[in-house]
Length: 158
Image 1 (cartoon, one colour):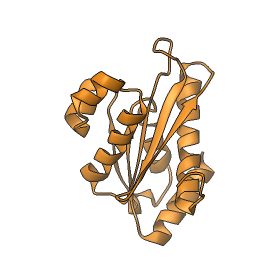
Image 2 (tube, one colour):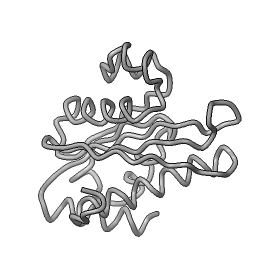
Image 3 (cartoon, helix red, strand yellow):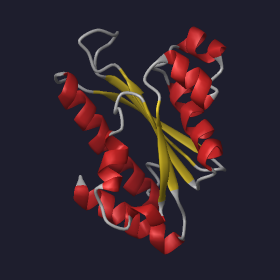
Image 4 (tube, one colour):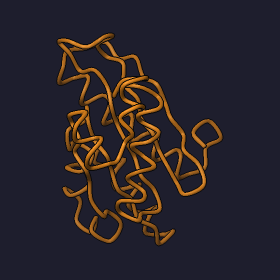
């Protein structure tokens, strides 16, 4: 993951842009990956680890109706998490993660990764099969890959 983060930081530096995160299932793992890299402070603004529905509503201002109608693990919630994080940190990019790591939740391994700019939001649905912590690690790694490809302008991720 460190190689991906280094490349992402290089891309953001070259664009003179910054990033922020909203993490639920990844619980700060994306942020940790970034702060492990010297020089990340030039592009990384911060992260909101919003694990509970209450935190999503109170910190990120996700409408209660979105969580009630679609659940906190949904395309809609991931979309709003990413958009709210852009606003919260006034960043150029935001990445949001939400999902069911297990052992409970239905279905375990369902995750959503959203990447937002001020002009668009791209949400990916993942179906991962592994134990709890491996699901969390996989979601983190996949989010970094999607972010890198998004920043590079890959049509599949834009």
